[in-house]
Image 1: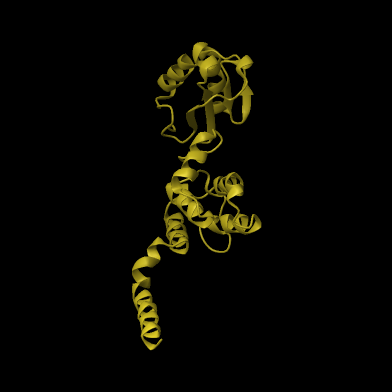
Image 2: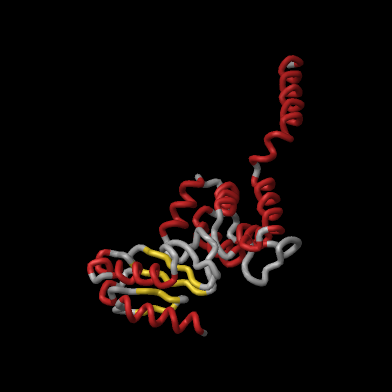
Length: 207
């Protein structure tokens, strides 16, 4: 028994000594690192959000986690909360959520990348999401993408240099009767052409 107690004590001491090196892998450390980045990188916070302190973005994520009792079934709700506060889902954010919900990072990333309303990059003031599902593709949605890329000098998946417009390609939006379909700032534009969507984007950017 004394030998067993001695072994347990040795393990405790060893764990204490290793704490400094293993702490980096904990959720708390990830949160601190993310909040530290938020202080110097404005892209890591939503517009108007405080960069640090009681109302920092990860505080909001923590509140959502507690409200949902850390349920894995609440992953989409947690991701929504994170995007509302950060403006997009960074790798750090998804890593933190994965650890807190005890889910593989690949699972969290898979969900975030599957749904078109989640952004994995900082977005511009306006967003243009072009459906490239089968029906939309057949009806020349690709021409819409090419026209907008050429006009605004930005590749799909990126944001213009001035931060005004993000152009994204999304999976099937589930309403093939409206093909080709584009969602501009949350508003559905049905049966679009390259010319009509270019005109709409110009109008939106002019304000």
